[in-house]
Image (cartoon, rainbow, N blue to C red; front, side):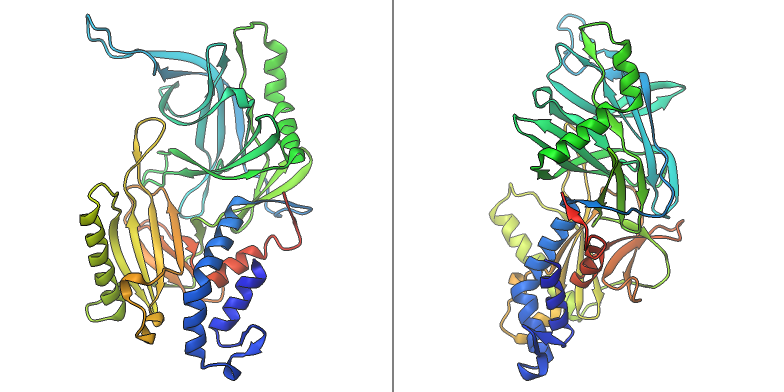
Length: 431
């Protein structure tokens, strides 16, 4: 996949195409339009998904110090979800306090600073009647843990063993159904203006059909010091501590190295990462009369027609259309997505178009295929200044900066930037 992306980048830059000099085939503009229209969307999307969804085994890790993490046994007040209001006195459902394991990790805020303890989740003990293992967001009210929402759950019959990295942005779940394998999840955290506020939104990424990987994850979880202590104290058949812990983690520029059962695993993030404020240029909304503005208007009319034809189809809110050279960026706030807790969450997403494709006078704007689809994560309550990378270190990235921050929260949009990101796993083994 990296080779395919590299060949595509060479063609777009007018160097070679299928191994031949571009000037011996067509003019550079024709080659660029051809590869963008026929190949870039597929290569960009597949490479992006592969980098995010795959776990890599590596013999070396980042030279940065390990990130702080902790876990300990604690009581927490949960909403009694199964109780309904009494028909006689109409009382609301009552809360119940249970014991479980509190997991604490290091949050990375948009200015790049590490905030130990900023991310936390609560996993209740497993009782005989429970059919699921659950994760809860919680807050500390004067020393009392109170769950605020159910973040994620999984059936107990799968015998899940949960392992987080120290930033709690990846969740590896070893399961048996009946074969042993690992479910890989991304944990998006809400990025509020108040760094004390956090919330986890868990999404599935991939299934590692590797019995050895599942064994290593389960071995690491079950051998954690806390669980060994709890199992030694367990004397009641009615409950058992949940199999969950946090792995020692070192942070790279856009990746994390996890130490799992004596081996080093690497995960790469293609979603928003804090970057230095140097090497960026402010993006401006497309001005009337520009090719990007015209494209945006045409796309908006086309979406309006589709919405009118299908009134039940969900519609994302377009926030802005940004213009950069021949590229056009549409940024949306997604429709509200329901989660396990019944709440609704919204993400910032974007799509990228190469307006040079319109030069051929044969591509209708409403049918133009975006060359990339971007996910900035679950971002709430933030005013953004949009920026695009213009230096060798930042080219191919787009991001935003908050008014009170010196860092840029960015994602790679160009295929060439994904290639550079992918080189961080060249020479290592895919799980």
